[in-house]
Image (cartoon, rainbow, N blue to C red; front, side, top):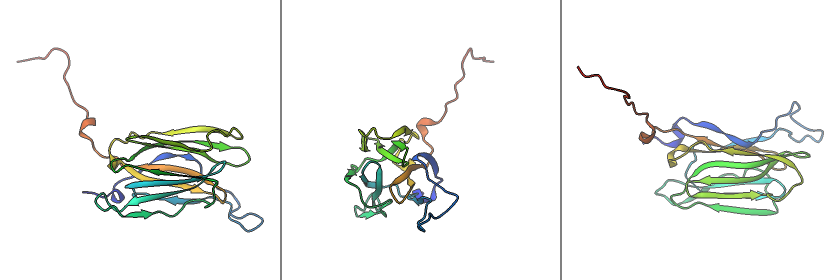
Length: 192
């Protein structure tokens, strides 16, 4: 069996965007560009931890080492630690991520206002500032057609000194026999 980390991965898109600037540091000497993170190939997720205020401030993942080994390994926390609210999403043993959606707010500060994690068992969310009308934003839906646990390839994203600025998912396509095109002759058949 081929492991998720050795298969081809496709970035299926992200909620939010990574900020880049011409000047890498501000007048106080602090870095201005967002920090990127990447959890490519880490696909046996059991926990998703989200901190938020007006924007999502951080995200962290809990992984099972393998489907047989139930030991939990935590990822690094991506984003500033402090948030007024915290939500833990705990996936069932047979549950896996199939998509992602969220609201990206902009105005005085860009960032992710809310996230919803889509799984084969339903939705978890929205998580974040869902009733806050203080910033203009837009909704982003990512539905890469994941129908098998092996197709989810992990998460990636970026964060600033204030909040999570983007989060996206990787897809690892697999051949599925139910999706193979069938050839069928139509019309009258010619027999010799």
